[in-house]
Image (cartoon, rainbow over all chains, first blue to last red; front, side, top):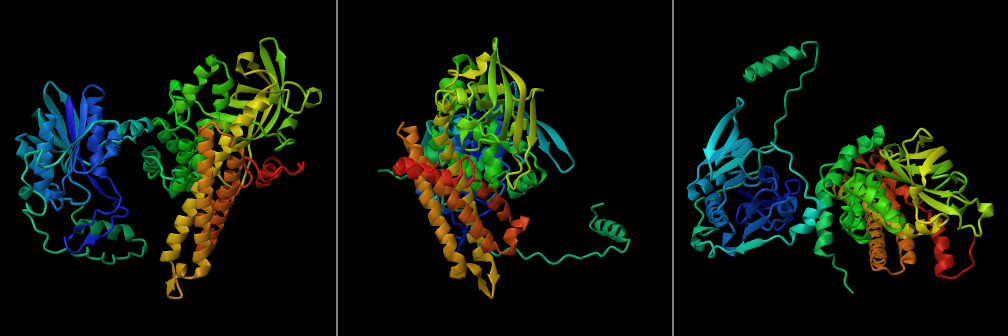
Length: 251
Length: 388
C-alpha cells in the first residue's frame, strides 16, 4: 500500500514572527517547523503501512523531520511562483504532486495551524476526483476499503470508503513518534523528488499571488479578553456556577 | 580549518531539541523536588535510539563519536533539563567503552546491545570515601574463589545505583602495599548491583536530585570470573582511557546549562522593567551576561577541539581537561549572573535559575575538581614539579 501524507512547514506557534503588512500574511523568514497537526497523519500513515508498503510525503517546503520519522520518500514542490498561494492554489499544486505518486490513500490534517482555512484536503480530493472522509480519529484499511471512525460532536460515525481516497485526520488522535536517531541519519539519503510547477503542468498564473481567488482585505488584532466575573464564595458559589452554566445552556 | 557544523550535527541538535521540547522546566523541577528519576524522558530518548548514540553499530548503537555524543548532551542540558536530564543517560552514552574495548567478546555481545537500547542501566563505581581522587588508594577488594571473585568494600557517589542492573566496578585484586606500583593490582569488573550482598544508600545533596548518587557497600558480593574486564591487575589503565571522553561530555553538559542561563537571563533583562526601563539597559546587568556568553563560546571551541582530537585518535588530555575547566567555570559564572539578573526571582524556584545554579556548581567538583585540572596542566603540560 502506498500512502501519501500532505505536510506543511509553519513558523513555530510559540514564536511565530510577524505579519507582513504589504501581503497581510505571516512572514516566513523565521525558523519553520513541521505543523503539529500534520504529525498525526504522518504517524497514522506509518502505522497503517507498518513496513509493508510506502509512505510518501508531499509538501511545498523541505521537510526532513517526516523523513526522519520514517517516511520513505518525498515529493517537494518548490517554485517561486507559489508565493502567496491561497487554499485553492495550494490544493491544485498538492493534487498534481499527489497524482505523481499514484497513492492508494492520501492523509492530510484537518486544517493547518497557521492558515486554519480547513478547506485544502477537500479541494485536493475534488481535484483528484477522489472521495474524501473528514475528521478521522481512527483509520483502518482492508480489501481496498478504508474504514474510518469519523469524529462528531456526539461521538463518532463509522464510515467506509473505497480506495483510493483522501482522509483528513483530527489532531491529537495518535501519539506521533519522535524522529529516531537512525531515522535522522537516514533521512538525508532518502529520495526527494523536487519538482517545479511546470513539471506538474500547472500554469504560473493559476497559483501564487497571480492566481489568488481570495483576497485578504484587512487584518486586525484579536480583541483583548474581557475581565470575567469574580465570584466570592460565600457558601453559594456552586449554585452560582451551576446557574451560570445553565444560562450558557452548557448543562 | 573548518568551523562550520556538519548537517548531521545540526540534525542531532534539532532531533534532541524536538524531544526535549516535550519535557519543560516544570517537568524537571517536579522530578528534582520529588527526587523522581525522569523515566518518561529517559524512555523517550531510549525508544528513539539516542541512548546508544556512541555505541558501535554492530552492537545496535548509533556508531557515532564523542563529538556527536557531546552535542547531544549539550542540547539536553540547554533545554533546561540540565544535569537531571544529562545524568539520566550520561553513563550509558560512553561508560561501557571499557567493556567494548577490553572485555570478552561474549560479554560485550551480551551487554552492549541492551545498553544501546536503553534497557540495561549501568553505574560506575570508582570513588571511595577514603580515596577520593587518589584512585590508586581504593580499598575495595576482590578475592578469587574458584570460578568467582568475592568483592568487599564501599564506594561513594555511585550515580543512579538503585536503577542500575549492573555496575562497572574498580577494585583492588592486589592490595596497594603488595602491588609492584600504585597503579598495578587494580581490576575492573562488571557486577550485578541488585544483589542482597549490595547495600545502596542515597546521599542527600544540593542539586540534581532527580538522579541519585549513592554510597554502595559490597559485603561479599560473588561475581563470576567471566565478569572480569580484560586482564586482572590492569583495571587502572582501562579506566584512564575513559577519563578524557568523560571530561569532554561533562564540559558539554556544563556548556548547555550555561547557554540556558544566559538565554533566560538576557530574555528576562530585556522584558523586566524597573525604574521605567528594561533592566538589561543597565550595563551592570548586560555586561556580565555578554561576558558569560563569550566565556561559554570560548569553552565551546575547546570542547570541539577536544572531541575532534579524541575522535581522530590524537592525544586529547590537555584539550579535554581544559574544556572541562573552562566550561565548568563559564557555566557556573553564567548561572550566577543569571541569578543576579533575576534578583529575588532568581532565588525563587519559579524561574528555575536556582535549579540551574545548583546543578552548574556540580561540574566544578565532578568528575574531577577544577584544582586537579590545574595540577594536570601545571605538571603535565607545563612540566612544572608535581604538587602532590
